[in-house]
Amino acid sequence: MSASIAGRHRRLALAGVVALSVTVAAASAAAPAGAVRRPRAAATAAVAASFNNYPAPGGLGIDAGEPSIGADWATGNTMYQAGLQTLRVDFSISPPTWRDVSSTVTSITTLDPILFTDSRTNRTLVSQLSGGCSLMAYSDDDGSNWFQNPIGCGIASGADHQTVGGGPFPAGAVGPLTGYKDAVYYCAQAIVTAQCALSQTGGLTFNPAVPIYNATQCNGLHGHIKVAPDGTAYVPNADCGGKQGVAYSTDSGTTWKLSTVPDSSTQDESDPSVGVGAGNTAYFGYANNTAGGNESHPMISIRRPGSTGWTPSVDVGATLGIKNVQFPTVVAGDDDRAAFAFLGTTTAGDDQAASFPGVWHLYVATTIDGGTSWTTTDATPSDPVQRGCIWLGGGSNTCRNLLDFMDATIDSTGRVMVGYADGCTDTCVNGGTNTHSALATIARQVGGDDLIAAR
Figure 1: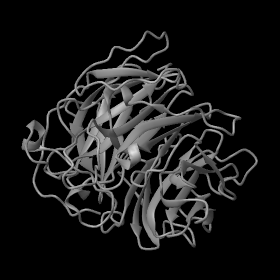
Figure 2: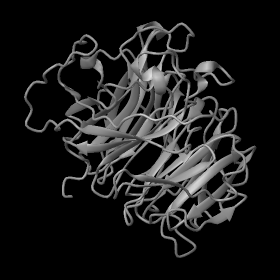
Figure 3: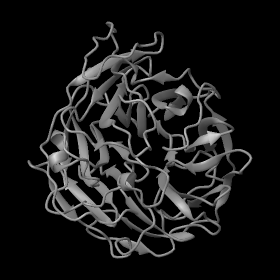
């Protein structure tokens, strides 16, 4: 966790207006920074998404490195985890209201914060890493009431970089033991391996943890677990034999297999991410190591239902000339609709170096044709998220303010929402020195094709 950053930071809500389209069939040449490339006509190309950005007001969310975001499809509320604060955001009024609804047990101490909202049940679970286990709480009313669980892990769980997720139980596999219908998974690192534990009680208790890979198969930190409509659980990893891919389970986490993207290469900084559509198509977004390690590009590959392979990866930032990316996160809605969000810069070079001069923006690439074409939007065109380096090597480096990841979700209409920490506020917005803040901010889609066509 980063230390709290004092002071109140505000910025105006801005709509993203720069868009491009990238197709699988043709590679795109880089465009100069700020230029707009007109995509070739495509009947199914997405209408470019536009976004407004909403920073947390009034001193809330000022320590939001590693944010998580979830959406309650029943109430319309958005849930946001900013360090020790669980925030509830109501977009039904303007300006939206932000309220601290933290539980007691998850607002005391943390080594890593995680929030997950299950859109099928609208339960929100919050996890705060605490050594070899986690403190956990869950709420069925958006934080008005919490069930608090001081042992929010399974026996033999790992001690770092935990993730919590959930969804349907696979047909014919182990199922629920209570009236709560969905599976809940808790996964964490254990230095040379990683383990996942299943809860059949909605997060009340967890079964013993099961290894999902060993040190001869994958290295480094894993990403965040996602569960498909058919119950398949996916945990992404950036380095499995030099490739990026997923550990996956089709039997409620009893056994796990590996599947890697053949044309990927490892990038030992940001976790990859997976989003799964309504028909079980998996979208895998990652930062690909290129140019001898001096660049990383935003790549995405797709695994169709019934297939054991992945489609050729697509660089969704090529036309905008994006040379380095961090914090990839993917969410899907309809089976042919997905969004891939990331921080990107048009500056090449070592983005971890103190002298790195890059200016980082939030980008969101969307598809409405199953990945045949992608339309990428700069969601923060006039307001950078960071100036300079983004450090992901741990410790107390000045550029460590954004920590390790960000998150994305959709609401009940398929509107994309990205939860990110803003590291460039106040005078930094107009070219001043980076503030190294971590202000809780939501980029909320306000135009363009969303991820659920029928709503």
